Amino acid sequence: MVASTQVVFMSLCALTLTTSSSAQQTTTAAAAVSGFRNVPAPPAATNDAPKTALSNETRGDIYMARKMYREAIDMYRQGAGNSAILANKIGIAFHQMSQLELARKNYQRAVKLDPKYPEAINNLGTIYYAQKDYGRAIKCYKRALKIGQESASIYSNLGSAYFGRKDYKDATECYQHALQLDPDVFEHHSNYGTLMMERDVEERATYHLYMAKMYAKTGANERALLYLRKALEEGVKDREKIPSIPEFAALKKDPAFAQLLAENPKPL
Image (cartoon, rainbow, N blue to C red):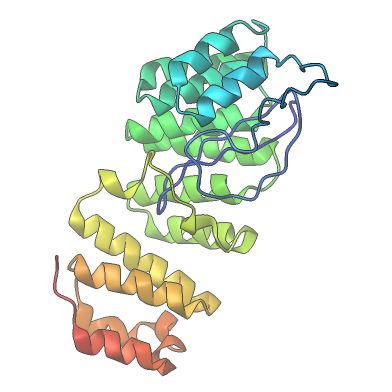
């Protein structure tokens, strides 16, 4: 099974794409990116040091970081044709260009080359999610978690798939587990593939209320209030019941909670 290195494309509860590097294993904290992270810069030329030749994969990674996705694909295709890692990266490049069918084919090829490649399986799940085939997406995420190590990003993806099916109980459990693994998992932003952009205002309000409750339970009051404000601004239903929500029992002691409810933000 390939060594795991994560590339994260998230916004709010965005789906996360993951990749592995055959050239160098890199441990990355989940953070906002819009391409590959920790890509080595070309070495500076000096009079007494020869230039180091870059592999096609590394050149592709650099193109990805520059959002030059077609050029990245060309570089990756010059690599080994039987590489699951490169097939997955080609899939991500097509995914970034919203060419979902080509992305799907390359993710599937990566999984065929390495059936125990959790990153590619996760990424295949994001395609099914985008197509609103939540059942298949859930199967992919569960399979990726079973094969690989516990991943906050994949648990958040699984939660998003359950949320898409309006299975809020299982969605909340997955989101909570993701938060336990990475308290900042929902705060990583990028410009790709958000869950909320695909939802109507009512669903966004429901999602943000659930996020507020989860953060309140962990004592992250500032984030809980931020999501609660979003829910109110999106016209969450039964706002008069908010003070009696059990998860807000401790949050109610924060003066900012009473102030927010007093403001009673109107739907935008």
